[in-house]
Length: 168
Image: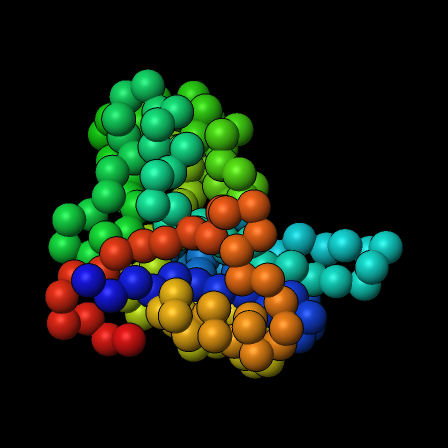
């Protein structure tokens, strides 16, 4: 199985919010930061813009927190999905997410969890600086090592499986 995820380099994010607009339009045909599954967190003190997105954890805390088992792993793509018929909008998933990556649909309260656009994340295609990438875990770890960074701080490196034959 190949493993791919969205990775972020906040040092080159310009805070333009193109990822948010693209995401909301791709999923809901509206340009709105409130409807995006990716968010830009602004750290004014350090002058950073940090894209926040679901890390597709191997053992998702959000999934375990759901009392209705509405967060499922798609068997074909391996990404997390929300079954809106089962979701009761309790927001326990967002409270448990260690990456602060879950927001909610404004009118229903259902969680907005990145589904990686079923293998072709639109936010990655539209990021003008390349701060958002869709890459294999091996590519990500190699880039971190090249930059002299510890690739596994506190053992929280997220992972996601992808079906056989998927692109790397």
